Image (tube, rainbow, N blue to C red; front, top):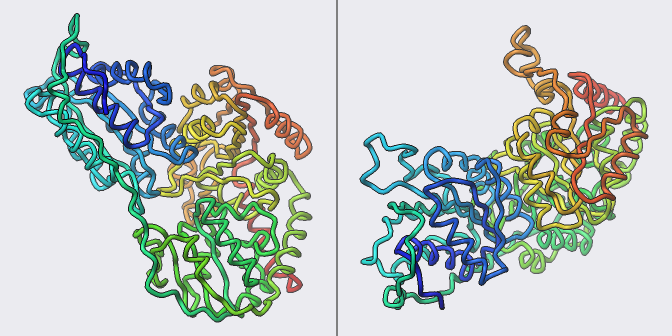
Length: 566
């Protein structure tokens, strides 16, 4: 129960109850605070609350959009809900991109927005907008509080907060929004009042944690069977791996599956290349059933193969969200570890996929050695990343290169923002993640992604552990060289690629971040290994000609298609 009863006014008492509910009953250990005036009751309540509850950490940043992605990273690493406090007006709207990502990826973020009282709306009052419903359909729950009023007992306030905050937990968890208007004076009055009577009805209620029901029946699996691992949590990945090992079933692992970077006989090396090779596709024709765990697959060739697959296919996820864009898989909502333990599968016929994958990997090694490229950089990072360090491959070209060319070794934790797959907030997400992941993180991203999130270098400079930013600078949107936009003639550069002619040396200096710009594969290995071994942030910039990666990818595809031995 809340023991503190002396407050200067109702604003302070109201805000203190809200902070207490977040931390003590709903497991929030990280509170991210953006500067502002209208949010003063919430911010000061958090500071006072922390004096008696050191388990609550306060994080600050001057940009709400980056702060929200920082909170997203914290939620990913701590695997607990995280709250963000903002002032009123457009500050709230700046949270929207991260709230979208959290909604799509079932991550428990709480947006706590301060607001003006009702009488200041619709009359031109400063920094006042309609904040109700501002996150539209990208929420699991929303609470519109009144201005603090003693007629609303603390018990009622607690129950209202609990009702929305329980949406942070359970199988379909996700972000919630609490809009909290305050009247002036915002900073309280001298002295204290006794609020014990107002607090008398406050009660503690557990939020509960709804469990997934076991599916009434499991699919009848015979084979030959292929396991496909999409985006998974670590315990889910362990269960899928154990299933493949137990029954000799090959696993095609997406980069976000927590299995793609693991060297294990059950996990196919560089699986994307199987779908580019005539011999690999021929072997895959022997697959008669597909059992997929998790969705949001990165590889275009894998998605195309699955869309054309004529046999039975099941897609297992702990969430109720539909994760099959082709609407062909049979969806099963289940706890993945329990589901895998329950399955019994006949011993499988060996389709010969493992030796083909190894041969393809060797051929790729020879190809990548011919020149220093973005493709080779992805391979080098995967080969040299320390066993305990996490990897965040940025969206667009970076994650595709890592999915195609990563060397499987230690099974590093792989963090992705693939809910909405935007290029915004990637650096801020990495900064938040590494805050609760002391062994460090490598962020591989493109130049436009880093430009989009440049002020998050201020967060990166404060990183407590190793944070290595590897930026692939190809002077614009390199992914568009692989898309039909490339054929748009004079409009390609000005409307799609957007060349900028910038580099990041001075930006690193501006924010006090170590900087290196290696120009060869050996130099990258040296710089990267040293950066991983030191505390704090290092920015490694790799500069490549626009379109170079696209040309190499096309060359590699042609070689694989022409070489029947592969």
